[in-house]
Amino acid sequence: MSSVTRDRVSRTPRLGLFRVPDFRRFYGATLAGQLADRFVFLALPLVAIVWLDADEFEVGVLTALTTAGSLLIGLPAGAWVDRWRKRPVMISTDLVRAALLLLVPLAWWTDALTIGLLFAVALAHGMMTVLFEVGYTSYLPALIGREHLVEGNAKVAAARSAMSISGPGLAGPLVAWLGAPLALVVSSAGMLLSALGVLQIRKPEPPPQNAVTRHLIREVREGLRFVLGHPLLRPILFTDGIFSLFLITYQTMLLVFLSRHLDLGSFGIGLVLSVMASGGLTGALLARRLINRIGPGPVVWLATLCTAPTAVILPLARPGWLLWLAAAGLALVSAGGVIRLVSQVGLQQAATPDRLLGRMSATVRFVQWGSMPIGALLGGLLGGLLGAQAVLFIGAVGMTAAFLPAFLSPLAAARELPATAAT
Image (tube, rainbow, N blue to C red; front, side):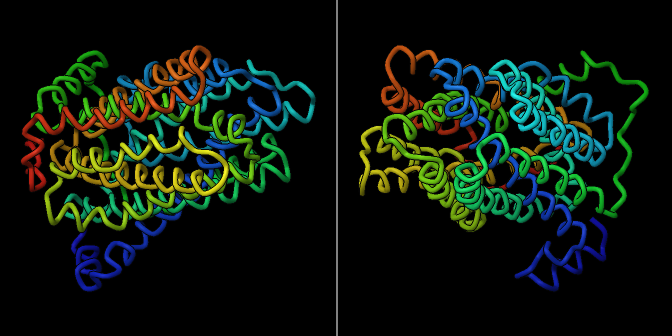
């Protein structure tokens, strides 16, 4: 980060990075992109559930394909992104995702909408999201400087959480009014605004190192070896993998349970999801304070252990006050997830040299998101065999158990961000 930027941040501690114009542009792009993602999260499954009458297994397959890109290109994505400047990656993937989302309303309008088309859009959109997220995570240290990573990650997490709250609340009525296929037009517009925001960033991005002499397999192997060999990054990887597996198992049946067992419409589902996401904003606002008080390492396992058990309330819910108690429990799960994310992302970025940031991010995402298609298929299969309610119980227990790898490792005692390894 330049000395001018440093001075702006230090002179205005309350505003901090918001005094930096490029960070404001990045933040605005994050808001637009995350709002678009929230619309996709609600609208795409509802297209399958309501418009195509998909069964539990088909919903599971759709959710699996949404995240299958991490398994298909997750590891090479890091090596590819490390070869390229990150900003063009983010812009181009946003544009492609915007175009893909428009295929669904176009197919619906021409009476050509099928579950196969939804599967294809979900897979292609997910692959573009892998490249976007790897570039996004790797770009932040170059944009704000490593000394501001905790603040930057907390502000970004707050933006994502704010959109997680407002997104379902806006998407629910819009889906009810326009229908889920047409609501995806709004998602496409959000992706376009995200691309425009990143395009307006003025700070030059340093060129990637040694782009000509790189070898893909060797690069992938180096990224894996770095993450798996690091005493702090390895337990984060396992904690993430377990939590993500059971989170997606849970979420695969979440909309099915709300729609078919509690008989909620689009507006009611959006409201429940907004209450759930409100915890994420609370978590983002508390994350820096908790990290400074007890340390980033303890936060990773404590946030999971103290919040994930409340996910068990939802499968016990019935229409009325118990439903909103369950939604409050989901809000607590969301708060814990964001607090953990802010802490572990700061640890990951601080521990990784610049030349390996893309590969570190891709390796983490490969495990975290690569477990998601497995969790979605597991949720769909178990949902067909045992029912949505039983799957929610299983998911809640699995998410709670995810604290163990972090708790039983050196991460449990890591009270400071590590010094960056030599580049």
